[in-house]
Amino acid sequence: MERINKLKKAIHKTLLDKSSESMTVSEDNPIKVLVVDDDELTRKLIVRLLERNTKAQVTSLSNGIEGLEYIKSHYPDLVILDLMLPGMTGFEILQKMREEELLEKHTKVILVTAKSRPEDVERGFELSADEFISKPFQPQEFIVRIKKVLNKTD
Image 1 (cartoon, rainbow, N blue to C red):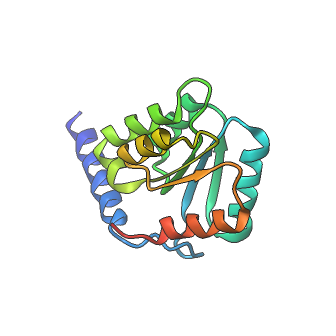
Image 2: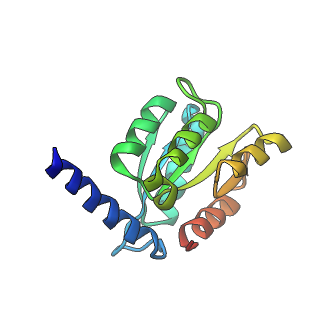
């Protein structure tokens, strides 16, 4: 058990060290991106935009619970998260992510949603979302905002 705890601490330290570096998308430093959206067309559009405009490794899921499980086991650099999801809302996922110190420092989160009321935007930023993009979005603006978040250092 002690050995497992030491291993977890070593992984934690490595990921924290990585989080202090600029997350520039390049072939030498591929960014791991998770897209969680229950709308298949939106999910496919986001994946296609990322694949064509970045060197990111992209995974996509349609369910909130699966999304959170993936985040906890794979530690993506960026999560693009819808708010209205089956199983668990995007706000619930973001809250659980932010409760874990590792995810707080390592994983960036962009909320992409049709729920763009001022109170939704405010809540997203209160939960430490890095960006909020309303649907429908312009593909060019979407990519610019994604790259801005990826290249931002804390």
